Amino acid sequence: MADLALPKTLLVPAGLAEGLTESGGTINDIVQDALNSPIHRERWKYTKADGFLTQLVALSKAPTIYGEQQTGVRWLRETISNPIPGLDLQQGPEAFARLCFSGEAMRLEITGSVTDPVTLIHRSNTLPVIVNLSASASLTLIEMIEGDEGQQTVWIDIGPNAKLNHSRNALNAASSSWQYASVRLQSSARYHLNNHVLGCGVRRQDLHVIMDGQGADAKLVSAGMVDNKAALDQQITLEHRQPRGHSEQTIHNIVANGGKCSFNGRIHIHDGASGTEAQLSNKNLGLGDNATINTKPELEIYNDDVSCSHGATVGTLSQEALFYLTSRGIDKAEAEALLSQGFLQQCIDGPLAETALKAMIGIRELGASL
Image 1: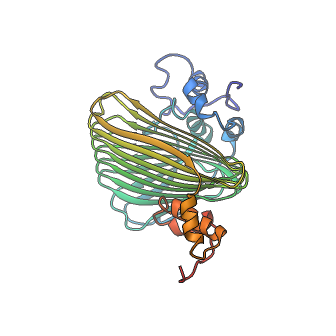
Image 2: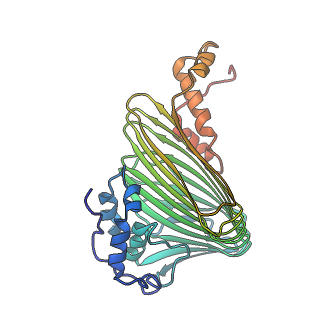
């Protein structure tokens, strides 16, 4: 595999570069080293990175927003001039480069308990979005990814005792799609993500969650459908940096008819994160012919006082369950669809659930007879 490289030299905003060159070398050298570190190259093992790197310099525009007129909500466009909370150049060098190439970002500031959801709609390459929740604030954030292709980066900082419910649908039939999200939780902050995704030409989802405060709580639930030679690559890193954090990840994917799905989920528990509880479960169903599934759950633990579990399964629909349904008059195709729906529906929830389910499972109404 050839070295990964950015399409052109970075011009880094002064505030964004703060503290990043302490170890010596230029920012461009540091980003280049991060792109080609063994750990990061492993993240690109099953997906070619070159096309995404080339698109980092594409023109960007603000996403469409609804609900920004509420009390406690501030939405503005600004030049990037300050450090980004949770920014980890080693974890997301491509996202850092996108910040630099964009030069501007959209900022969403939440200063209280917001009653109605705030909705962001990405129809193309969009400017980086920075979301800040003040202490004890609360918000329901809805994201919908639309358009033929695009790149979106979102940086979220959740203040002490604040709560964010985040629902995201990526159901567009894009030729190329990349989403990066970095989420930092301060003390006793809560974050709940419902992610619903369809495979496309090449779809990449990167998620980095940092439990940076004592007693932080994160729940990540994702349902994916990859069909008809589409592709989905999901990379999730969840870091516990402080004591008594709790995290739970549940990811269900169906891969069918030449589709390809890759999942890499890593839980990293730092030395000082005593009393951590962390669980990760990735379950996959292969249907039809030539489905490809790669899954790699990981634990990296540097503290003895933790309770952790991780696991992954790859299988097919239960033949016993199919026999049960078909023996009661349901034809085989309908029985397979019903079982597939049940498998995905365990991970479909939130305000976008109905739209997601209809897009993922082409099931006709079964009627009262069932």
